[in-house]
Length: 74
Image 1 (cartoon, helix red, strand yellow):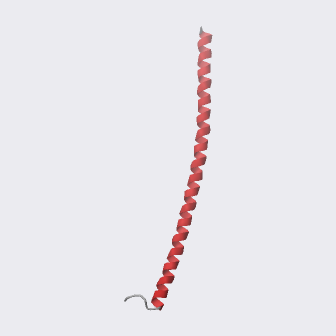
Image 2 (cartoon, helix red, strand yellow):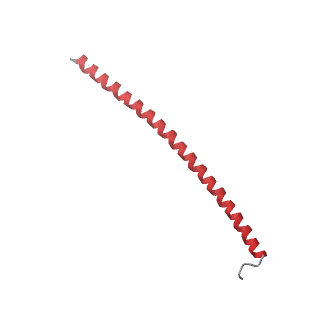
């Protein structure tokens, strides 16, 4: 009887270990996907900052043109 109980316990422990291994693999996949998303968000923020800088330069040029042509009100 004790051999049966020990064997049953061993089988349960093996099943638990197998389940833990699956969870580890899924967690590694989730971490990888999260890192990819973080990189993508960082790239989008960089692109947005570049567009803002270009827009600022266009606004400066437009203001300078308006001043030269006396199009701005005092």
